[in-house]
Image 1 (tube, rainbow, N blue to C red):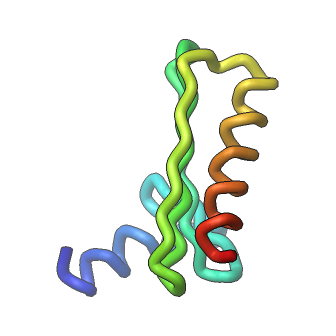
Image 2: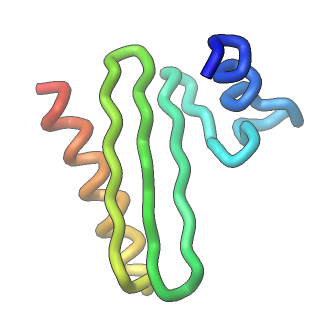
Length: 81
């Protein structure tokens, strides 16, 4: 992507933290997650460090969603350690 396209896709346009499919964090991280009720996935992009982490499971129960988030955040922490 061109830098301008990346910025457009990842900049909130509606006064909150939602940016065309991505949520933005105050520290610059981008987060995208979703489910079709049968699976759940999450991606964390940290442009400042170049770290990208993803986790997915073939079950979308609330406990599984929590576990997928924990795994993605743990992978990010391990990459930054």
